[in-house]
Image (cartoon, rainbow, N blue to C red; front, side, top):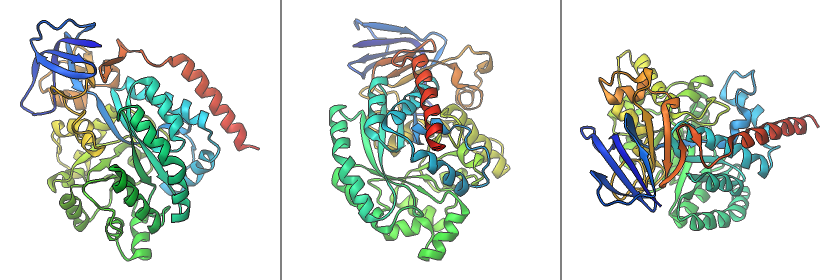
Length: 431
């Protein structure tokens, strides 16, 4: 299919000083031309007049099917108490639940401009069906808990299907090895994760230093801070690791991330809601640590909207450093686009608008009342834009939303099935 995006204000995110007012030609899912495109007989043309065209967003850390647990439970006082309640319900989920929960999550992400996400959950085959139907991209985590024996079993049961899915989707769906955390996984599990990632040329994705308790417990149990402990296991490898949260990293750990070029995924809303703390992102940037953005799950956020995440990232940094606009808005946009692509091992495919990359784009209404005037386009995108300003979304050259209408998801059917599944989950919990 040949798609032409005409007359847009292009924000390529390849260079802060580069903006275009021009056209984009996409053929067979790939951007083939940017500029005054002539002799391109498109099958479909999108008028981007008065629209800002941005690379589609990348949600670098989420648990998609936790949409079921949005605003639930109501009584929590810490990450640990929240997890203890959530895990009870997660044990009740079926493949069908995960399929429909993922589909609702994808609908929310497309509606807010995200076409690629990193999922950290279970029943990956069910998730992959929802992803394929919606025509988006994802890194599916092969989630690990417990000791080496349990992890070997999970890998044996799940890895073959993930390899098959990656091959069948030509890499639109990739997989990561995802040991949950140092407080739920043994050293043996992390070593298995590391070996499997190396053998399969994929990433290790794990939670790290999300609370002060995690750090103090690590010091007591291992005599090391969490990242130092992972490094002692050989997991901190620049070729295949990205980390979620990292709120409490000391200077030695920051130096290690810089040295090994390990991406860190910042989840400001989730961290704030759960009372975990706020990562010192300005300091991390000053230490040349690559920062991507994630929403975490909808149960702890409680949405999957990266526009809110970008805004919150900037606001919380300024509030905690007592420095107005402490992070350049352009850097925040990079976190939600190209930095996420790098974290997920997709730098060559997505994250910027360039010839040769995949046609993953979003069109934002530049005439929205909350966007005018555009005195600084990057500030406007971070602090003024709302996800509802995203009018059209293109994923791999496929129009997955146009004029706010989802094209690959029957949203009314999904909402109906989702609510029915949630009622069934609650009934199972009372048996």
